[in-house]
Every structure is written in C-alpha cells, then in structure tokens.
Image (cartoon, rainbow, N blue to C red):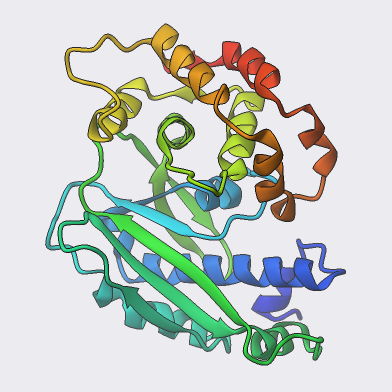
Length: 286
C-alpha cells in the first residue's frame, strides 16, 4: 500500500527538478492546511488567494503563498498559537519544518510567518533521490492572515482527504474573484509585474466566474481607490481594469508567470487589446 506522501505525489508530473520542487511545496501547503484545520483555525479564519484557487478550484498554475483572512476583525489575533500544530502535522509525515513569524509594522493588520525546511533533505525524504541541489537551499512558504478583513466576503466549506480528511473554510468563487480584481487594479508592482494576477484573471473569466461587487467595493475603499459617495457598478469596474491594462508591461508579466505554468503558448496572446476584450465578459453575482 502507498504511503500518504506517495498518494499525494501520485497526481503530479515530477520528471524535472523544478517539477519535483513545485510538487513538494504544494504537498507541504496541503499538510499545513490539514494541521490548521485540526487546530480549529478555520472556525475563525478563511482561506483565499491563488493557492486556494489552485487547490480547491483547479487553477492550472503553482502558487507559493498561503493567504488567510479572519472572518471577523480581531486586532488581538495571535498567529503563534497555531505554530505547534503546524509543526506537529508536518513532522508526522517526516517533514521537518520550522516556523518563523515575520515582524511587520506595529499598525499593520497583516500577520505573517514563514515555513522553512531544507530542500535537499526533503527531496530525499519524499522522492528517495539525492538530486544535484545546493545543500543550503531552503523551501520557504509564506503565510499571511488579514486581521482586519474587508466587509461582505462570503464563504463556503470544502473538504480534502489527504494527508487525512479535513475541512477548510474559504472564500467562495465570487469573493475570490473580487480579491483578484482588487489585486489587478491596486497591487503596487513597482519593478516586478505580477503576471500571476493576470493569469488568474483569465482563469476566472474562462470559468465564467461572477464577482462579489460589494466585497470588491469594500476592498477598493480600504485601498483609497473609491470613496463611499462614488458610484461603482459594472461599467466603472471595467473602466478601472481597462485603465490598468494601459499601464502594464506585458513582457515582464509573461516572465513572472512563466515558471509556474506548463503551457506557455497561451501567453502569446497577452497584450492590452486581449485583456480589454475579455474584460467585456465580466459579470456580477446576482
């Protein structure tokens, strides 16, 4: 009979070193989610972002971080109290990871931490092979939680069977899409264009996702992009997106997302005309 790790690996293509690393990272993410679930984390928090979309809704690209949001604001929320449960869950499968909290500005609503483990050691544990990997290379998975979440998100419960059956509360698709639209419009890219945001945007539209407009508006107000007196409907949303597409360096965006996908040919279409055209397909949740 297969071990739990072998069962979890069986769904991945792992011919190259990069494929092995990506599969390992995602297994660690799922084991971490299981540990958080066992510890009662999802009674007060919900999973969202690219990794939630990947694991529970079939996004066809790898995602690096674990993003969470409290269901209700709580400035006194302590992320540290879940660390031992995470370490215990990982250790039960022979995965030796440490957890380090990242100190942010005192007034920040975001609590952050990193899961860290030696890449070479874990490649050997999981695959039984000693690949040509730097002995000091580290697997690093960031997870963050917003302790002052924007209003009007809606949720659903999802279930996974491995590494053992567990339940996760996560944003439903319209609320996830609202979060991604906020990222496309507002993320401060500086010199690193986040092509992964654009890739996810295409994924949502290809799957006919609708938008939780009330939640998106709350996010935009929190970011200073809207005032409470501003009109905001479908036309205004499309205009914001089209204005954003005018400013993007799409070659840089392609370079950002390319390592996380297998079919790179689909990126050939990426330009402002393509994104403006598909934006006409956005629909609001009824």
